[in-house]
Length: 435
Image (tube, rainbow, N blue to C red):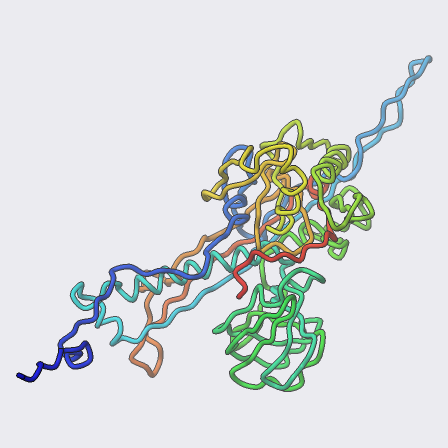
C-alpha cells in the first residue's frame, strides 16, 4: 500500500501566509458627551454665547424685587425705591491636550501602500476625542478638576480612590480615572502637592477604585485629592466652571461670578432633598420633577411647563431607569422620545427632555434653564501655532514631533435662580464606561 502523503497544515505553510488587515479602526470607548452638545449650541432658545476679551465678561444681575407702588388719597408720591444690582463677571480658563509622534513612524505611514491610517491624522482624531471627553467631565465638576478623593493608602504606588468630582456619593471611584493619565496627588486644599505620576491601572469595585501609579508618591494621606497635572503645576482651581459650582450643589458654592448667595438670596438655585422634599429617596417620580418645576417657576418666573423648549432635565441612567419604572404601566417607554443636539435621544418627562448622562454625579436630577447658562470662549479647540509657524514642532534632543491643542473657554450662569435640582436619591445602578 502506497504511503499516504502528509497533509499540509497551516503550521507548515505559515511562512507563505499573509496577514489580512481591515481598513478601519474600531473605538471600544464610548465618546458620549450629551450635556456638552446641548450647552455648546448657540441659537434662539439655547444658551447665550459670550466672547471673552480684555478683563473678562461682565453683566448686570438684578437681585431684589422691584417695589415702590403706594396709594395716597391726598396725591402724595411715594419715596424713591431702587432694586439692588450687582455686576457679575467671569474670566477664561486655558485647557490643553498634547500628543507626540516619532518621526520614523510618521514617515512610515505616509504612503497608502504602507498603512491604512496616516498616524498624524490618527493622533489628531484621538486628541480631539480626549478634548471632548475632558470638557464633558469639566461640565459636571466645580472648576477644581478633582478626579477623586483618596480613602485608603496601600503604599506609595497604590491608593484607593472614591468621590468623582470631590462630591460625596457621586458614583464609581474610577469614573474619571484611567490608565495612562498623568496626575498629581495633593492635600485636601489642593495647595500641597504630594507628587506626580502616571496611572498604570485602575481596578474598580463598586464606588471604590484601586489606582496603581508607575512611580511612587510619598506621604499620601486619606482625603487627599487626585487631579490632572503638568510637570509644573496641577489642574486644581484651573478648570472652567461646572454645574457643581455654577448651580451651588450642596450649598457649598455660595459665591460664583463674585456674587454671594449668602448675601443675596435670589442668587441661588432651588435645592430639594430626596426623601425630605419628596416622598421617597429610593424612588424618584414624575411628581417629584413637577414639584421642582413649580418651585423654580414661583421663585424665578421661568416656568418649564409654559416654555418647555427652554428647559432640560439632566440625570444618570440609573435614575432614568427608576423614573421609567414608575410609568411603564401607563405609557410606552418610547413615547415622547426626541432627538437633541448631537444626535442624542431623550425621554420626555413633564414635557421636558431628560438627558441620560453617565458622567453626571449619582443621585441627582438637574432642572436646567438653558438660556440662563452661557458658553464663554476666546478660542475653541485648535492646534497651537505662533506667528505662522507650523503646529508640529521638533522635540528637543529627539527625532520626534509634538503637537499641542488648546481651548480658551469657560461657562457662566447668567441667572442662578432659574435652575433647580433634587439630590440624595438612592442611585446604585451604574450604566457607565467603567469596567
